[in-house]
Image 1 (spheres, one colour):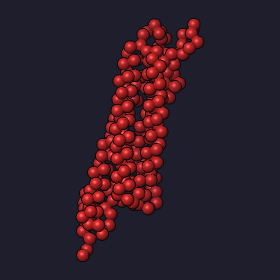
Image 2: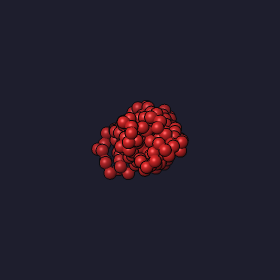
Image 3: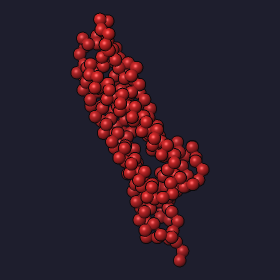
Amino acid sequence: PRPPPAHPRAAMDGGAFGAGKAGGAFDLHAFIRQPHTLLRLLSWVFAIVVFGSIVNEGYINHMDETQEHCIFNRNHNACNYGITVGVLAFLSCLLYLALDAYFPQISSVKDRKKAVLSDIGVSAFWAFLWFVGFCFLTNQWQASKEEDNPLNEGGDAARAAITFSFFSIFTWGLLTFLAFRRLRDITFQEEYNTLFPNSPSLLP
């Protein structure tokens, strides 16, 4: 018997899975245009801005002091949190950009499902951490005393860290949503393979 025709939804959603068919040549242009790649790059840039702002201008000291203090209410935990989350988010973006590039080469539906499940978990986790970071940095910046920083040194850096922490909530949240969409389509492929084991794959 002839194999059943490809499902139209699979034909439309196929482009969300990678830059080409499994085992095909890597297409950088197609890879860059994918929504999750663009969001991942934005998240990468935002992470650099957050930890870079704090590292470069997040510590100040008075003329009569030798020890530097965090500009966020002199709370070193606030600066440490922003730097740590920023650096780890930066590394996570690089890791998952590499996984996104390799994803089209994964022919096993089960392996693809594992990769996407990890993406969902990591993206949701980082969205939560950035939400906590945004609230924490904002609270400590508002609680900062004027006498501790009369010249408002590092003010722009503090606002940049807070602003891009806020933006990061949405980029990682959208990455979670896109990963859920990919999981839905992979689950459909898994069910299709169960019903029609001899049919060709619907996913690129």
